[in-house]
Image 1 (spheres, rainbow, N blue to C red):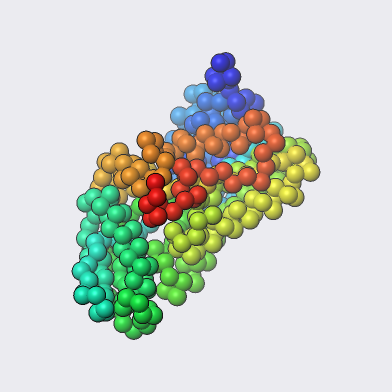
Image 2: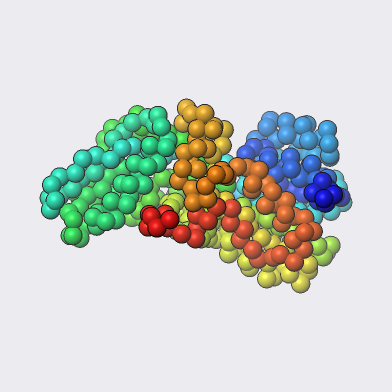
Length: 360
């Protein structure tokens, strides 16, 4: 089957923001294998330049410094692509501010006899087994729901079975240092911000920061890519959203809101730019283990991958950066020439079922 070995992006020019590491880097390498000429945009100058140096052995690749929240930067990098290669065929809005984020995670505390007030405190420990930690927290969240308890963040929840949740005044004081129990995971697209889940515990400045990076970056990339694609009457714009774009309640309100907004930008642009033969789509991966996450958690990458697979709906395979890259390859190629307005979920059916039902 010769088409499997064909260069699916032959003679196309692609701009990838956040291309210095993670999904962006994996996508850049795959695009290069399929014949695309590349512009890599990021704030990680050393890493971005190294990626281009590696890719220049098989294609033409250029690195340009770009903060996706800065319109001047985004405008310049789009113009640089056109100046260098004469056109822009593919814009992959992946962001350029991916970084480790702190989370607080631990073990379930004891509970009192039935009918008595219950207090659950996640013991502050450094994660030794992510698999156990994930199991503990999911079980804790489930029990909070069953017992009508309120999750206050900071690993605490207070209430009595069958009664209304108590006020935040019942929350215990939390004067210990965060440094004793902070660990890190790596978010695959943009920033997640503060790990606090309840909206009443959230912070406006954190909300604005998350929206700025995740939404403004997508908006500016889409705006300036369309500026050069409209006269050419062709192009594919791809943005990285998340499973959180369709599944609320699994990430903090700011991140969930930002990814719903990315989906909104995509759909609006797909409707507006369709008459110019410009396609606009999203890729939405589930949680993605990365080397940086494994390092921060002091685990082997395969061990981290296994922990995520254990909680997956689709068994026997694990989500990798390459899976997202191949989705972007499809959306950037002519194979998807009539695909626009699609939110391509790469989540192994996570968003179509509730594993807590335990039916299957």
